[in-house]
Image (cartoon, rainbow, N blue to C red; front, side, top):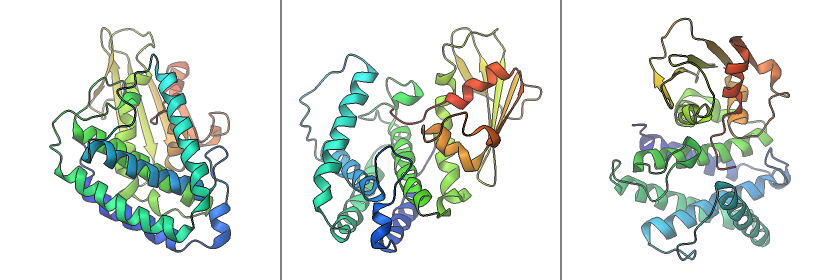
Length: 273
């Protein structure tokens, strides 16, 4: 279990402090999100708070049990919803946006804190290959989303606050849960081991091993893995969220052993994209 509830209040406060300190021109800065400014990313954060409260706490869904044939269809639908919201929110001032985020992100945290961490969540963590997820994992996924979007804002204004162990380690610990799923279709002899280390104060190492029909985590202290991947923490979050391509990140990672096998870790995506 990855328990992010205790760190959520600090993450929420850090966001409000950041937004209140932005200058008018900062809101129009470009971010690593394609075609989105700082303001656009901020209102997307507000939207995720409101939608999750409406569906989870209030039991309201406008989708009427809408079904999707593929993950790609679902992502396309969500991208359309996000774009519509961002467009509509251009008429709101930063002051109003901040006030709304401050109110509803705290209400969302209260809702999360009341959930039984081991009951089934309303959303599975699909980027980790899950058809069903317990609440603790879904809440941890929500943490990664809120960490990521705040980091995208901070990256645009050259602020590194969220790369400290306090905030970044929970993000990495959750995001790396996509690693076995990333290797699901990679053929290798049973017992093959891939080890990934994120290098930096907030980093850690993780190892997965090939079983008969899947890959699973094993003790990260394993020696002599078949493939060893080092990733600088400065770039890890960008790789895991498609914020940078592998070629651009070349100077920030190293591959040892079976480089072809290890390179698949660099393609891991820990967002719905």
